[in-house]
Length: 111
Image (cartoon, rainbow, N blue to C red):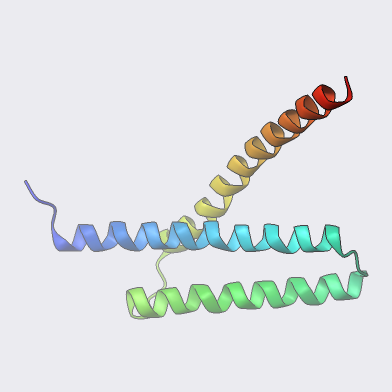
């Protein structure tokens, strides 16, 4: 039995929202990496954060406007947040694995 077009649209909309959350968090990780490489003061960090969140707000608004005729849907916002949380959890696991790999390689080179 095929799914109705409405259900397929809602699933695609949810998945798009989820991916937007993942992409927003990846972008913030990029900003954090940039900050570690080039440290700077609190005022610049605040300006960067403000620009980041304004950009995220525009991206969410645009996604809602283009994909859903501008109607704010609670599940879309929830999907964005869920995408952010899933990415954060996966990135923690990946960071731990990379640190372990780095220490194994470092021990192998030094020994």
